[in-house]
Image (cartoon, rainbow, N blue to C red; front, side):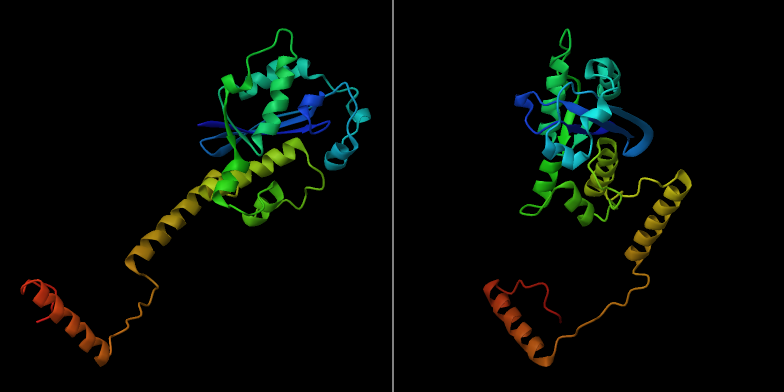
Length: 238
């Protein structure tokens, strides 16, 4: 199955106030493994960036003046995500901004929801960990995913981190840098450990014997059962 882990950075929080996307970051997974394919673009939003948003991602409008507009990279973006399942943290936010950008095109293109399935990892995390913090930093801590290099939010960096978190949440595969050889060795070691566990290798089974009082109480209970069943008790020890 082909999946694309996606994140965006924007000029502000409200798509209804014509805020725009300034960065898109995507990493591709195929059958739960990184393929090495990424899509990453900075975009000229043609408007100012809110101070609060700039504090989060650290990107200024001046840095984006020479970057392409969304319309210039739209075809490449659509080709990258088309037909994939999108993995997005707080998906309604990013999808709303992407849909708004797609509808600004001339002519407007088909909606993202018609091209892709969408999995919201925030909703998934809330179902798995109700009542707990489920932002990306909290999930990194919960699943031991290293995010110490994350000083600012960045679309591609956050997409890479989310890919690792998603795999840890859904299957325990949290290390994305394993090569074929080491991955095969790890699978072999897991199989050997599971087989040893089934055979009881390395385990000492503690046997707790009933004392005389417990044996007497058990015998009395069996007698009562024997009478109630008309002598049909089958598990009394002769």
